[in-house]
Length: 429
Image 1 (cartoon, rainbow, N blue to C red):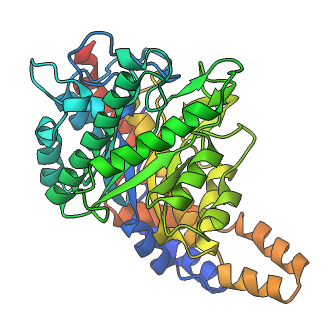
Image 2: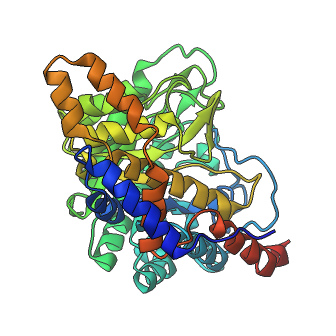
């Protein structure tokens, strides 16, 4: 049964009522919608193919604690299929979109090109797609799903030959990210995440971290001709993963120290901390010292399981914190989850729209009023207003935002996805 679309008149009428209600609290809903529309969100290509990549080399199955569970039919098997699926998802999501590409989505034809030899030309089809559809690209070196990552160590590997291979890959990745930036005439984020760690107690926690510092320093020195204003480097921490439950070389504390002493920025993945630990309190601490940071929007359940992002309390808290610190223009936003148990395009849309909802919800926060109450010592008034905001007519503003962005309002986007599944995805089975 198809979802019945809301009449445009009803959407506009509900919005005008909501606009008046928010205005009574000093909130400009028109401004909130305009601001939300211009803040970019990077869609991750690996949701569309269960983190398989496009490499021709055998033995490139996922490793490093990365696992997309499920076998829903219609997975993308080629770059063209993956790009078509991403574009279909993007057309159902409001706001400004970017696309996040991992290195093992290079398209090298029938020739196998190892990762330390990758060049911008191997991403020519991605860059042509980017320019055609106006979707800027971000980049990620791929330090997993490779024979030289089978031990669980890459940039901190004790074997110098293995380590140098990954250093060359990191340096090559920065060159590719700059090529993306030049192609789209806007910066490209180059995010480094490595799986390095140990399943059980290591006898030496020190040496791998010393080697990791040296590896990153070599990467940035070897590609020092890359413009750091065009290629924005970030490093991503993790608490634990499958196969690295006890020890992760690139921990939060490690990368915080590294980014405080180097030009790169930290990446906070919402799923890379303890499942009961939220990241929102870290934002005001880190942004005291760093000009920017990258947030990977994800959702853990019991372990770093990268579930589809939902419009939940954790997500709202992150964006409220950024809004209240006037720091929304100091963060880069990217999705990072992979679910193979549901329609993959629906997963993209659900997660991206949830993120956009949290962003818009935060922009409707009466921040100045709340902070004024707090300065006056009126704690009861502050908490009462915070609670009152939860029952404000937010959904009417969200519907208006979607209408203005020319994307489906309500659940009608799901009908588009189901139609695409019938026409396209089922033929891939």
